[in-house]
Length: 355
Picture 1 (cartoon, rainbow, N blue to C red):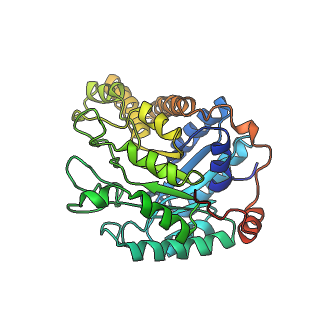
Picture 2 (picture 1 turned 60 degrees about the vertical axis):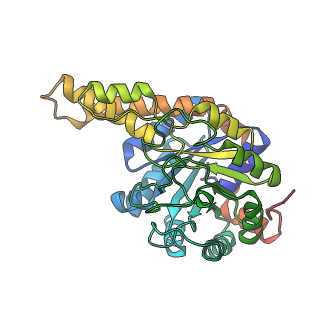
């Protein structure tokens, strides 16, 4: 089965009331863990690589890993997505490397740390959609800046994230502006800011409406019922994974992530893509620490990477089940090629609809 575009996958998710976890990868072990989970549950999946991952693994290596997983698991529709592209050039090189979807994060300027204004965001995102849609490639945009409603600070992960103090308005996507943004940029999916952030240290307490503004998602969905929404920074940072890491020598500080129940609430209100990275990192790290702590003489990477992969696959299965993604792969009868998607864009079939 060929790689699926984000647009076709999220259209199917909207029609069948489910969300799709987008798991970040940096290496073979993560790719295999994700696909093992997806295959065991007959679930479509999004595998995404950030600019940091592309620098770490190299585009050539990532390309061949993506080729490998689609060959090993031909029955599973896989969307290969660029996470937080910082400019048209970054998006274009991802497309050249075989990605079927790119994110143009124009909420920040090309340096990946300076909050951008409206005109910059619209302009650069529109440039990418115009370019990508010609080739049938999907585009995710972002309106609002990811960061903490508790501290007013942006987040920093993998070399990407706003620096310094942000205003409350910057940290929350304006629903009326979201409508205008989608109309002007023609994005296939919209990432919104509502209090989530990258990394493990999202909240200092169990999040409520003051620091996790789910009402913003609900309002945007009312105004844009046909637009696929995206929640970034949505790892749940499970307590049991924190405990495993700390039991075996780690020093994670107490922290809270995004509760699965709140993500499920988002799925009911138009959220179709949910970004998860930290949870998988924690699952793997806990098992690596455990093996090396219990057997300090061990030096074979396979002896600690195999249980790490199993722990990550378990976490991925949980999310695929919780987001109702399980069982959906075989319902996608035909994966459209990028050439077929390009014809649909050209014909106006995929033009955003506003309520």
